[in-house]
Length: 163
Image (cartoon, rainbow, N blue to C red; front, side):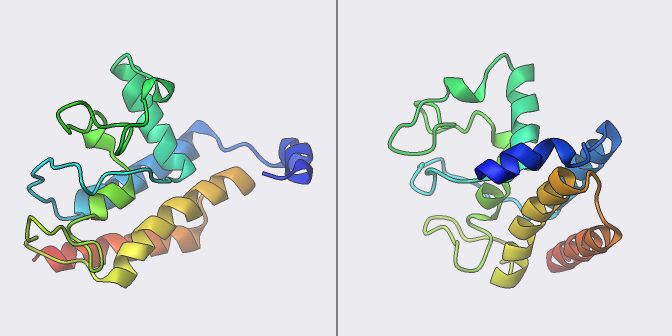
């Protein structure tokens, strides 16, 4: 965020709890629609990643309930959320990119073949949705109808792949 953005941030509407909870439910609905993969826990695909503001909020709430904090994660050769046995300590709330790895075109795992492969364009939409909803909460304090429709389309297409 640049200096001007920092000075003007107080002028932006603050999202209410209802809007934040709705955004979290929408992201979680996409999470649930992505096919799972029988991860072998090699840790080779795990590394430093970025994630959206709403994903960070979901992760922060989860680690707080577990008595952890994001700051307690240490960067190792791989992802800071991996323990010494390559178990992801935030697996239940892992970010979108982690969920897409192994089941998306261009992100396939060399060790496990997925039952369904998500087309690259749809995978990018899943990631883009998280950033879009985060930006809307930050800038207008709510989720637009257009974004809601986009979300429904993403979930519908993901579920259709699994049939």
